[in-house]
Amino acid sequence: MAKHNYDDWKALAGALTFRNQAWINGRFQDAQSGETFVCVNPATEATLAEVASCDSADVDIAVASARQTFDSGVWSERSPAERKQVLLKLAELLEQHQDEFALLDTLDMGKSISETSGLDIPSSIGCWRWTAEAVDKVYGEIAPTGNDALALMTREPIGVIGAIVPWNYPLMMATWKLAPALAAGNSVVLKPSEKSPLSALRLAELAQQAGLPDGVLNVLPGFGHTAGKALALHMDVDVLVFTGSTRVAGMLMEYAGQSNLKRVWLEAGGKSPNIVFDDCDDIKEAAANAAVAIFGNQGEVCIAASRLYLQKGIKDEFLAALAEAAKAFQPGDPLDPATTMGPMVDGTQLDTVNRYVQSGLDEGGELLIGGVRQHREGEGYFAQPTIITGANNDMTMVREEIFGPVLAVCEFETEEEAIRLANDSKYGLGASVWTSNLKRAHRVSRKIQSGMVWVNGWGDGDQTVAFGGVKGSGNGRDKSLHALEKYTELKTIWFRL
Image (spheres, rainbow, N blue to C red):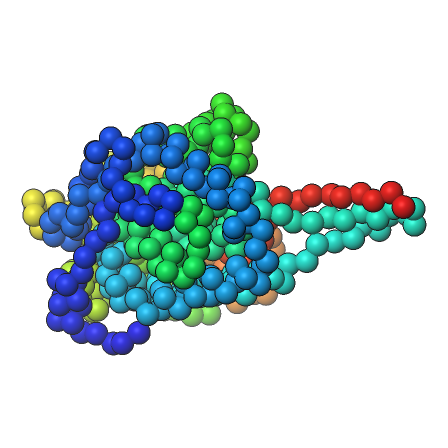
């Protein structure tokens, strides 16, 4: 990707056009109802587009299209090597249009252009490429039966996948679902968040150009209580995959039970603990990571390390280093490559952040930096990076996911206490442990109830490594070969010899 300055990005943004209709069976079309919703730039509060607002009528049409295409075999019965070539072509087209996609996500949900251009879009391209290359390297099995039989265990595409994805990493989260689902041979109906639908609609257009048959991928912008609910209740959707809040995840499981018992794979909320022991050998590095882990992407991150647990002896030194590291995160125009924090995605999210900050102060916390920032109409939904000390696990802001740049700082004395406090949560997505003691690192990381634990770091990952959580943070895994397990049916075929 070419290096652009502030003026370059503004000029490119001014020339951008937006796809604003649903994508069904290979063409753009209005919602059946004719309804639309406003897509707003959260940095300026200006309208970007009026986007088709799909509901159950559109879901019925899209699912029927996906089912017909799946049953035809035009994609589901292609060889893995043939599907691979189409998805590699899509990755190539994404790379050619990566500036456009970086701008779409920055304008749509507010994250900094340096993050979309440097992380989100390259990672999405890498996901398409890696998954495409992996799909023809997944083998079936022959079971070790007696000599009078041959038992084959094969993996087949399942059918129609309903995918509901969030707004915080619009293209990346869609890619984590779409790449393995399509690579495995399924058809997909994707509902992007109504807060960030623009990149998914453009992606569908490029997928057609790459050679994906019409009807294999359908994109329905709309609200959760309309399009999302209809997709979850649909009797002809075989699998539902979701990234979003734990509250909505529970509702989707209920809808699956009320309909056809479709499998539901969930990547839900998080309230990740960041534990720093007094034998941490680099306080400044740990503090810098703690700042990134809560202020990066405005704190709108499911794995955000929003609970910081400091061993008592290093608390003062660490907080001084943390306050210094936090100075690097100041909200500003997300089209400026120097900006490290953009706005909250909308006014509702800004109000949520301010409400939790106030509750933390009301319940006895002390403000180290930041605080409530009053919104001025037309100036964007910007929040301040905020650190509240003197927190404890009984406080609302420590127990509930905020999804904003708000850090609660608690303290502990012993290793056992740190583990107990970290596990005292309904969530279990990510966790960090900082220590120079190798035995402690192994002990603590094994005892923490979390799908992912980082030792002396935060948020590190790779396409080869599974991503997901336990407890209220969901089930199943994105990324790695394990992602394909969600989108394939394991079939046993027994030959009596």
